[in-house]
Amino acid sequence: MMNEIFISTMLLTFKLAFVTTVILLILGTCIAYYLFVAKSHVKPLIETIVSMPLVLPPTVLGFYLLVAFSQENFLGRFLQEYFGFRLTFTFAGLVFGSVIFSLPFMVHPIQNGLAALPKSLSEAATILGKSKVNIFFKILLPNIKPSLLTGVVITFAHTIGEFGVVLMIGGNIPQKTRVASLAVYDQVESLNYHEANKYALTLFVISFCVLLLVYIVNKKYFAKGFR
Amino acid sequence: MIHIDIVKPLNLASGLMDLEVDIKINDGAFVAFYGQSGAGKTTLLRILSGLETPKEGKIEVDGEVWFDSSTKINKPAQKRGVGFVFQDFALFPNMTVKENLLYALKKGDTKTYVDEVMEVVGLSELHARYPYQLSGGQKQRVALARAVVCKPKILLLDEPLSALDAQMRSKLQDKLLEVHKLFGMTTVLVSHDVGEIFKLCGDVVWIENGHIKSKGTPKQIFFKHKTSAAFEFIGELLEITKNEMIYILVLHVGHEVIKTIATKDEIVGLNIGDRVRVITKSFHPIIEKL
Image (cartoon, rainbow over all chains, first blue to last red; front, side):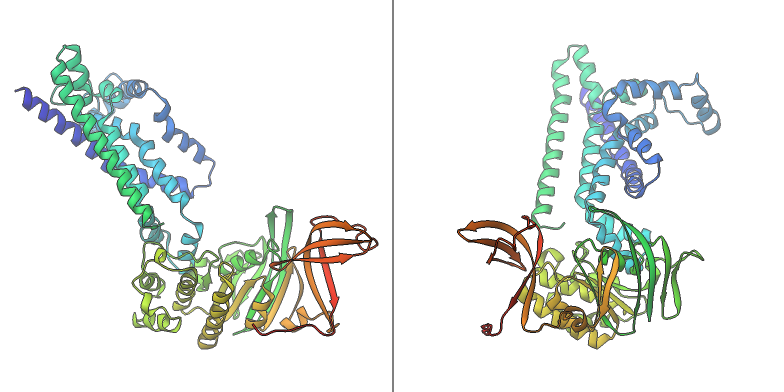
């Protein structure tokens, strides 16, 4: 019984991290590209919003998401009534919160990767008559693979490690919104140190391996002088 | 024929300055934009390619208007169809030599054309390599091949040889001449190397501080002072030391550091770091074959 709960909690955790990462890979790349090319006055504002989760306590973000999407308020009621869609205490809510909270971890590496490419690459492609879309997919993206990989892995790992936001918006419901990081806390509260350790150690080992892999792969990539 | 008549404000380290030029370039010519760095040569090349937009003026190529500030015409860089060789070569790191060229190939052209161009510039052996596996000279040849493979009417070269050593330069200058003869496109070379310009170009446009100082054939431009018995160099004064009655000057000329003497009268007003002209009347110089 205990084992089943452990497995389902871990699966939920990874499902959340996976879905969040896939959404962020697309969304984050778009935002990073916008920030890379934008010259408008709105750019600093968007950069600020993207970076806010880095400085805000997760509970602050979670709190506002909870308030915004609660059934007591307009937005939450609107989503529920017109779309039958609920973000508080649901898996969708966890994903939404995680996407916002991990946004800088995806956007920053990609934005930096794009900025580090020599400007002459896109200029050369422009002169060869290529469209912006073509340049984006054929020249820019393939040459920032290490940044994409960094973004993906850090986002994945960060989502697994998320605590505050998922606690606030998910509500720590067993088998539904209780992810591994919450389970650790839960088990410690009930003085189940052995169970807590199972979750904690799994998270520790996975995070370590994932990060190690990124650094090894990126090192090989750079050693090849690919960039 | 290319006719450029434009004004573009430049923001340089030395302050604000207007690039203001009016040049005509004949079909099939090999022209050099010569001048010190920061004179506006590269900007002019980028304006011609469409990468930068002038403030006002007109660019006309073979009767077609590429840019006209009065009618707000500005043909985008994508549609101008020029060939451009960048100073840093700008090879796409994710593509092999051949893929770089195939990417540049116009739709409808046969892929065998890529092989032909690779043959001309001597890249056939290297076709499967990635840019990071190439030497500077090889990269330069790929950049040249990539610029040529889309059959441009105009080829623009932004100091393409400045990063290479003297021997490689000379070899690639021959290659540039060969390519120019073979394809016959109008070619503009940005360079501050007089020797290179003599070897390659039929015409020179000397640009200084954003304005044309003079234009003509290399001989007309660089042999202006007809005192043929004298050598003349421009150098930078590095050091002045007093040695009994005379002064010893250390100068940086070209790639050499030389010592010369001067009298007390001659060093008046000279400071370290000044640019100076050194003229020596040499009626019987020693010339050795290298």
